Length: 214
Ligand code: AMP
Image 1 (tube, rainbow, N blue to C red):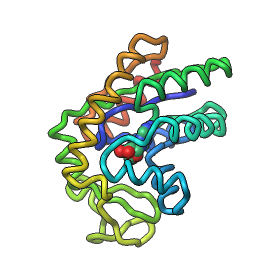
Image 2 (image 1 turned 180 degrees about the vertical axis):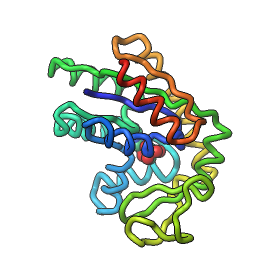
Image 3 (image 1 turned 60 degrees about the vertical axis):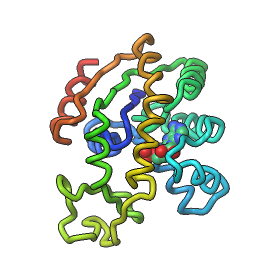
Image 4 (image 1 turned 90 degrees about the vertical axis):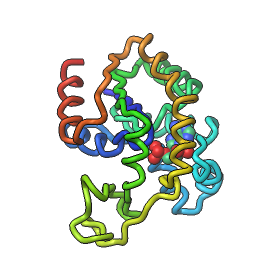
């Protein structure tokens, strides 16, 4: 099964994917996580991607498409995609690659959240640079202030979670990513809209229920 989770930055895509892979036997593929690990490893791709990520821009399609299509293939076409596709050309290239393999996207889930909620949420988001755990200072704080529950490292704010960058990312989302929603609404995949302003557990239940019906 191939599922796409789409929504603005801070909609909770990563959190939901981590919960969903526990219930459904699928691999979680996050383009943002792949870039962050390339940046941490100081690879060529990481350095190129960083220049765009730090400004709240999208990484150019040519650096994303092959990387993610290979990841989908390596997951044996059984995955939940988080953060990809994010532009119409990415969606079209993914469709083409899947068509060649006689497979297709089963469901597209939109986590709908308004801009104000996004800014509120992201300003309080903290992440562990070592194990990738995600926290929210109000709704999901670590047990010990500033320390990751899972690995004991110091948690940090992502550079691209700073307010000015978040506003840029939101603008980019409306301009570049929202058009893929109508692309998928017209396609044969099940399109599922979820109210992303609910508590994380309620969102997971909603998604799981709708995926079982899809
Ligand atoms: P995320 O963790 O999904 O919010 O991604 C962090 C950043 O990585 C984004 O703000 C983009 O700069 C970049 N990025 C992630 N996925 C993509 C994609 N599919 N296309 C272009 N840029 C991406």
